[in-house]
Amino acid sequence: MYEGQCSGDCPEGWRGRNRECYNESDDLRVLWFPFLITAFILTIVVFFGRLKTKAVLKNGVTKYISNQWSIVTIIALVAIVLMLAIITQVALAIVYWSAAVFVLSLVILLAMIGFNVFWAVWYYKAYFKTRKPELGERITVKGRTFDVQTERQVENPDNVVPVDKGFFAFCKKHKLSTWTIFVLASIFHWKTTKMYYGRFYMFDMFKGNWTAATKLRLFQEKY
Image 1 (cartoon, rainbow, N blue to C red):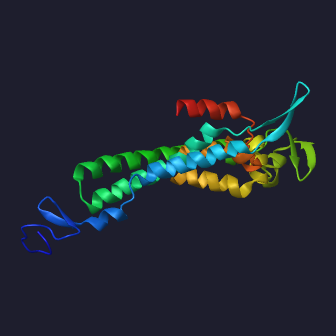
Image 2 (image 1 turned 90 degrees about the vertical axis):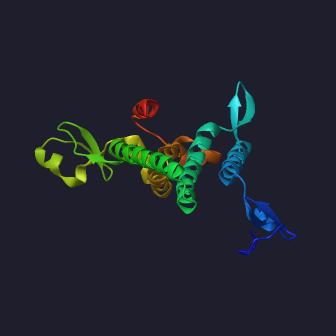
Image 3 (image 1 turned 180 degrees about the vertical axis):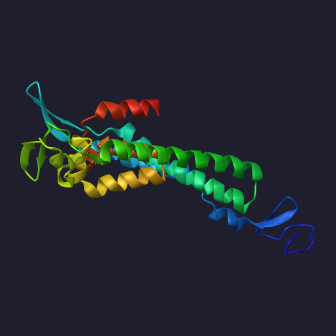
């Protein structure tokens, strides 16, 4: 078939496929394996971060090292690409309508969204929230340190303390990057929160600190 008409052969510049003629130039507009290419580029970008070093004195000898956690950072970045690939697969399954691919892709997408929501809720409660102080607890408010001695002090909203003091201080110092990573993790993939401690290019915003770091590690292993 060529332009709706039966034809013995396809014209020059066209080729036959399933009894229809296709313009060969259409193949030039196809980008093969875009998400795999993107993941590869991100991996290269991460490994370039190893070139950024700092001087460390070890056994009386100055050495230049990088403390970037490359594998952790790659996992965090490629996780976003993975979610975009699943979303694209669902969209293409609708455009070219393949019921089996659509159902399976949709199930995977919904499962990933569910995991992300669960992780975001847990992470927010574990590290972003504040709590009321306990009687007898020593707290610091606006540079003033004191012991909580009355119920009135406990109920005072100005006296709330962070659930995790280490991460609260880190979040306060790097508010924009911290919340950006949290939003990306909530939308795309929970593993994006690994950027908090990936030491990407050794920037301070990727050197997270937690008071309850062990709790985070154990929950990640179980999750």
